[in-house]
Every structure is written in structure tokens, then in C-alpha cells.
Length: 296
Image (tube, rainbow, N blue to C red; front, top):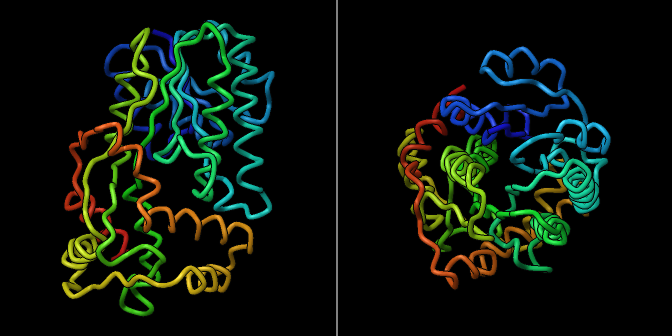
């Protein structure tokens, strides 16, 4: 099959590309970074260098493809001039236009748990908006992959642990959180891309732990067995994000997202649909990577 992968060589797209190539598929990887071309080609894939905001580029790249993996890169975390929800809508509409114009029949979208909700999820609302855009496509087999909370999001707490000796956020303590490895997401996406038809929604989760349990596992890995994960108020979380350079609006969206983890809202449909934890990479496995990053 001729398959198009978006997301450059990111945490999901790189292992996804490797798996598809190993299975004999012809893979083209879209990246906005010219410097990624050599690395993409080294994997055995074709590099398509261009922007997701360029509809003509997307249409030409999608031409004659059997399947396309569509994701929206979290550029807004690094470039605070970008409004997250606007960016999601722009890229989502561009995907829809390019899919129609190129005639692609199989699409796998990277969404998120909470993608079913139209409010109360902060940044994750962007995933819902893209789901709604792509659902309007006719004569296309669409699967929405809804991963749970990414393990590597925990890396963002390293600076806090080093400075104050604990983790604090507006979800924590005994809050139960579904977590996932990008490798398990990549496996699920690879599985779906080669199907002509599939279920409309597929959740992907690797482990389920409380924040206290997560702190214990991570703490053991970094030599801090008494590491705590403290639950703080939304106001305290907002203040902390702003003091670390996050714009007020983006901070508000993150606080709302974390609040939906605390309330259980984000995972409600996962449990209601009787979805299972199928991933193979557990938090204890990720803790090795966490410790390596912590000790850098």
C-alpha cells in the first residue's frame, strides 16, 4: 500500500513509519523541516517537505495514496503566538480539502480521549473539532484513534521535581489516569491504516494508575522513592503556568484540560464504551526513559 504519514519523525510517526516499512508498504512522511529529509529517507521512506497549512502541497502529496494518517502537531506548545483551536481547525479543514481533491478512501485520524466532547476539555477541544470536520467527508472510511494521556507529558514535571521536590497540578493524588505509550499508539494506527473498513473509534491505552502510584513509580526510577503528586486548585495551577511563561489563554486551556482529568470527564466515554487497556508498554517501562531524561 501507498501510505502517507503526517507528524514528521515525532514520537508516534517515527515508530509508525518503521513498522509500515518493515511490513513492505510504500511510505511518504510529511515534514515541515527540511533537515528531517535525510533521516526520513534513511528509514526507507520518501520525504515530502512542506506545510500542513498548504492545501495544494497536501493535495499533491495525498494523490494516489491508499491511506493517510492525519495528526495535528502541538506547535502551539512551542510557539505561543499560535491559537491552538484555530490551528486545529485550519489544519483539519486543509486535511478535508486535500482528501476530497485527491480521492483518498482510507483515513486514520489521531484524535484524543475526550474527542467526543464539545466543551470542558481545554486544548483537547481541538481534536473534537477535527473529528467533526473529517466526519463530513463522504465515501471515505474514517477511523478516529483516541489515545489517553501520553506518558511523555510527564516529562514536563521534571523541572518542578528538581526545583521543589514534588509534582503539583490540578489533577493528582488519588485521581486515576489512563496513560499511553506512543509506541502502542503507533501499533494501533499501523493496524488501522491497512484495513479498508474498521470501527469508527478506537481507544488506545497502555496503563491505568493513580497519580500517587505514578509518582511512586517515577520516584523509584529517579532515586526519590518518597516523591509525591500533590493536587492543587485550578487557580494555583493557572498562576504557576503563567509564571512559567504561558499566555493566559493557553494556560486556561491547560487548566481546563487537567481539570477534566481530575473530574473523570475526559475518560468517561472510554469506560462507557467498554474500551480495554490493550497497550504493552507500562508506566514502569516508561519510567526508564523518564529517569534517563531526569538525569541528563
